[in-house]
Amino acid sequence: MDVESRQGPKGGDTMAASEVSVDWRGRPCGSRKHGGMKAAVFVLGIQAFEMMAIAAVGNNLITYVFNEMHYPLSKSANIVTNFIGTVFLLSLLGGFLSDSYLGSFWTMLIFGFVELSGFILLAVQAHLPQLRPPACDMMAAAAAAAEGGCEEASGVKAGIFFAALYLVALGSGCLKPNIIAHGADQFRRGGGGGGDGDGDDGGDGKRLSSYFNAAYFSFCVGELVALTVLVWVQTRSGMDVGFGVSAAAMAVGLVSLVAGVFFYRNKPPQGSIFMPIAKVFVAAVTKRKQVCPSSSSTTAASHAVISATGAAPVHRINKFRFLDKACVKVQDGHGGGGDGGKESVWPPCTPAEVEQVKVLLCVVPIFACTIVFNTILAQLQTFSVQQGSAMDTRIGGGGGAAGFHIPPASLQAIPYLVLIALVPAYEACFVPAMRRATGVDTGITPLQRIGVGLFAVTFSMVAAALVEAHRRRHAGLLSIFWIAPQFLVFGVSEMFTAVGLIEFFYKQSLSGMQAFLTSMTYCSYSFGFYLSSLLVSLVNKVTSGDVAGGGGWLSDNDLNKDRLDLFYWLLAGLSLLNFFNYLFWSRWYSKSVETTVQVAGVGEEGGGGEQQEEKSVDEVNMGH
Image 1: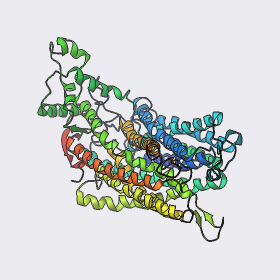
Image 2: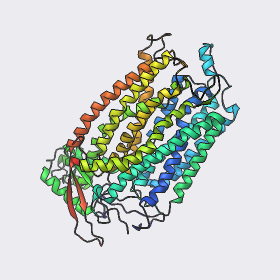
Image 3: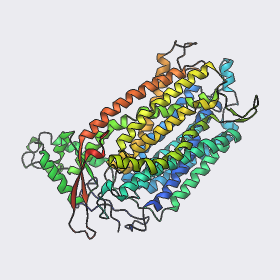
Image 4: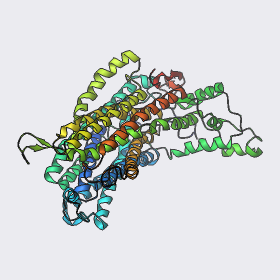
């Protein structure tokens, strides 16, 4: 029987309690039959096909919104960023439902079909002319300064479009964190059963890190196919066929998910994940007048509770010491107001519960530092696509329409083409080399990996600004390949930041909260895209009168009149400031996490023999 962690005392709380991995029938898993890479490969399948489907829509959506639904360029950009932002914001809902009530598998299956229905509805609208505004050339209308311009989608047409779009957002948002968490759940984490006691330093810890790299590789494959084959289909055969192909890809992904049902190790839901968190805060406030335990007593209590429950590794935090009062047992007659029965209402929380809440508070600044990174991603999926549309898209000789024309959205495939080679090289070459140099099993720590990406992404906007300034001087004559460097630099930086962030959040959570903590990674994407919409509106308002026509840097539908290059320089400056902000908070986090308390060597027969091990903060130190 494959037991994730030993069962705690009867009546113990969710965060301190253990989990038992079960198969699709709810029976305890076998260590050889269930889990491992043979199960994770089915999850990687839905990762690739779902990404293929959503990327083909999201990365070229601005073209459909602008050309077919006839929304102005800045409004179209905001529609796209709000849509993608909502996808990632809804990941919190998916993580909550999975950990609390449904479990990862059923959450993925249910919301996978919701996403599929959205793709089908988009294809139907794109196919039926009566569900779209009358055909009109937006670029020609803008160039002629036609009074009133093209008719925007409104009423029922707009309602159907946004209903389909947000069905896709709901399905994809609830699916994404569970794909990562369910795949990672196929590998036992440190402190779990099986008795190896290695934690993240053991074999499964290394395999877990390799899985995150494999998941990113699967993501890259899905993106590459979407940005080449599917975007080409959209351009050549119409958006209706393109949306239909996205629906077909999503259906194949669901088949892959269901095909692995006999091999999965499933984590049963454990009830509301917010109740133990709320309990710590309420208990700390209720017992605020109590004497806080000493560090030594807290340490001893932590060891005792963790030994008894066999819980997953717990980071001991030296910040937010007021929360330690939640562990204090109120003596009769000394509870707040002298109520001797107060303790029966607010029993002491376990040290594991308190430390987990502290971890949640400590990771918030790390999370916040990735928002600007994702604001830059939003530009590559909106303005950079339009930037490519204003350039020479031909490959080959000939004038006019001669030669093959590259769909502007397909330029985003360049980094993923390179990353398909770089990700295996990272795992096969970089990680072993850095492991020998640093002694860290994953080569560099997740915090270091995030930092490398946050620094590198600044140069993506520098490249974008320089190219846009050059394009304005050679309007219509510059090859579309000039914008390739900004996509390439961003892709490399994303390999470090995105994977590092997912690994960082997953490893901070106790059993039962993996999907929700992973969803915080996607929530960063959400805030980044919402910030992009806010910046576009704010920049237009602040810069009104700075360009011809007085409408702001991004207010015109013609990039030759707008000042997109100045907007890119603004983002480059924000990105550099954000990197230095991250350095501060990563060191603050590293100094906050003193040690990791972990259980090793749990006996197979349920007997004693638990060992306790403390790991140095070197696992998370940035730059040490």
